Length: 224
Image 1 (cartoon, rainbow, N blue to C red):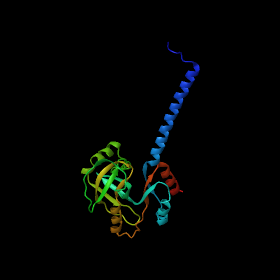
Image 2 (cartoon, rainbow, N blue to C red):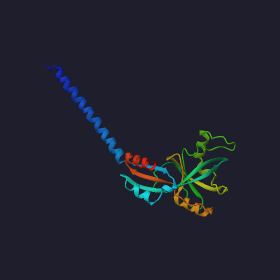
Image 3 (cartoon, rainbow, N blue to C red):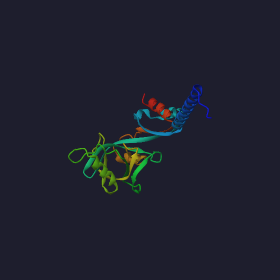
Image 4 (cartoon, helix red, strand yellow):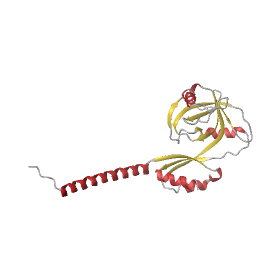
């Protein structure tokens, strides 16, 4: 005859199940925290050029989890394609260090022309010849046809009104999606050959940090 389970037996069973569930939840929580703690994170930070000196890099090296802090240069510019134009910033960066997800790419050799990588959301403010913001459909068409279009750019400053020059688009990035990138060395060369007398200044950093909490601590310290 099957033994009838008594109330105390049921309480022990429920307590065991509850304990098992709690241990399982704790295990997943610890694993999730451990993964976040060892996850490598990247952030692009814009800073006042006066902040960026040897002391800053020394101070950053003292933070737990810091892997690298790579200088970058942001340039005010206009980008033009198919009678459409956008006021934007071009981010000169070490592309070998930038973690990216490529949505579409075209084989493009580095040369005298500027080579750009467009974030998938970087053209949101682009306008047509009448000054109207482009529809999402038109933006999508431009990004899909990027390799076949004639792109032009010009740098914008208070000292000159540069003419548009041809450039190439080598890829569209799904991540990072908001910026337009080009090689850091091209940014340096571009500024040296402009002859405007402007000082070439690093305007930000690409941070590589192990652990999300470590990244947040560093970002908080930089923005104080």
